[in-house]
Image (cartoon, rainbow, N blue to C red; front, side):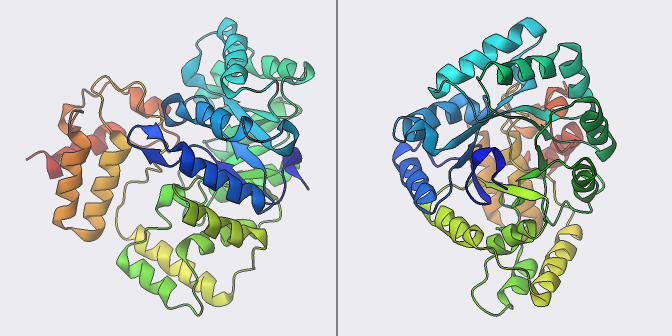
Length: 370
C-alpha cells in the first residue's frame, strides 16, 4: 500500500534538519533530499512549529522550489499551540500552504492528539474544518498524529470517520512502556483497520547513541549492524506499519536509513536478543524519557532549553564525566538554568511524553546548579 501516494516505507521527518548555528543548513538539506529522492522515496512530514517555524520554510526552499509538485508527498499538521478558537483554524492552514509554497498538502493531520487536545479539537470543530479542507482539494488525505493512551485513540477512531492513518510514537523501547502504550495503540489501529505511520523510531536518537553496556550487545552481532538499522528494521516488521519517519542531521545518516529501509531484512533471533538486552540496560538506568521534540519550548517564560538539559542529564546518568557539566554550561549560556524554572506548567501541557518536567527540572538543578 502506498500511503498518501508515498513511495516505499521510509519518510523524511522534518522535525530535525541539519543546522548551521540557528539556521537550517540548506545546502546539506539539499544533499539529503536529493539522496532520499534518488533512493526512490518521496514522503516528507513537517509541522508549523517544527524547528521554531523553520522547517516549513526550509522545505519550500529545498524541496518545493527544486522538484515538480507531483514528484513528492508533503504532509503537514494542525497544531494546537498555534490556534485558540475555531476562527483561527482556517487562516492558519491557509498560511501553512503559503509558507510551504504549495497549493495543497497530500495529507493533513490533526497534530499530537491526546485526551486534553481532543476535547479542544472537537469543541472548535477542528476535525470538521480539516475534512472541509480535504473536500476543497487543499489536502488530499486526512489523519491524526497521536501521543496518548490507547483508550483515547480508540475513542477518536470510533467518533471521527474518515481517518486514513494514525502517526504513532512506535519503537522497541516504547512498545511495552506503560506511559506510551505503543503495543496497545498499534493494536487499536489494527482493530479499526487504520494504517500506522511511525514517528520516533529511534526515540530522538536514544536508540542510536546507546550507553556502553547496550552498545556491547549490538557490537557482538555478526556483520556491521548499527543500532539505527536494528531500530528501523524492528518497526518495519509490523504489517500495519505503512510509513516510518526518521529525521537525521546529516547525509551519512540519511544514506544509512535509505539503505536499511529500501529492503528491510527481518530481524534474526540474535538481533531480537540484542534488542532485549538494550531494553534491559535502559530500564536499569532511570533515564529521562525525552525525545527532543521541542514542543515544551514555545511557552517557557524563562527561556530554558528543556530538551537539551534533559539530554545533558541523561548523558551524566550514563557516563558520569566532566563532559555533561560542560554541555550544561553551553546550553544555559544566555538562556535559563534548570533552577530558574517557575513551575508554571506550560511545558507539561505540551509534552507528548507526559513527563513531569517541573520535578525533573529540580533534579537537573540539583545536579548542575552548584
